[in-house]
Image (tube, rainbow, N blue to C red):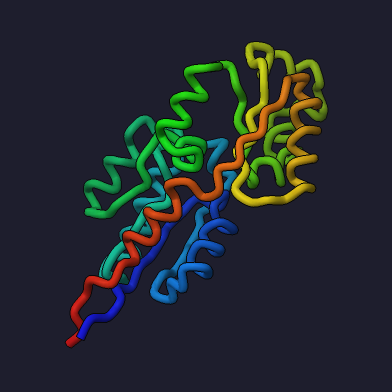
Length: 204
């Protein structure tokens, strides 16, 4: 008899909605999603140690673990943690790459390396994470310091939400940048989760 493996997806908090939808629509009842704080986006040097601590606590409780991060600015340190723990992680440099798909992102970045990217999560929390997080709300002059070398905003949307699309356009206006929209869906994230949750364990 074959039964599904028990799976933990330990992910960035910026993926919580998307992971919830992926597990729901694929009926992945064997998958537990646990997210670390999304604010770690602003302190990527903290990600490897926090992931390591949670992986240590999770060992022996799951058949498989997928770390729902790409490199995300850790300079290869997160990959080292996952390799030491014997667990899988998402492939790529960041969420923009696995949402868009590697080749599509390379094409976008190659066409214009001066683009600033938004996802649904970053659009939803743009004011808090970008304007407030970078101090631009209180010191508007910092906008040019941070974004003076950018030329456009590229919104990689996971869902079809007219309100988020409108908010992404406003975000581009607030940064004084041009705007492009590329619907991506869940990109490489969904097949990675479905793969790790595949039925492979023989039940006793």
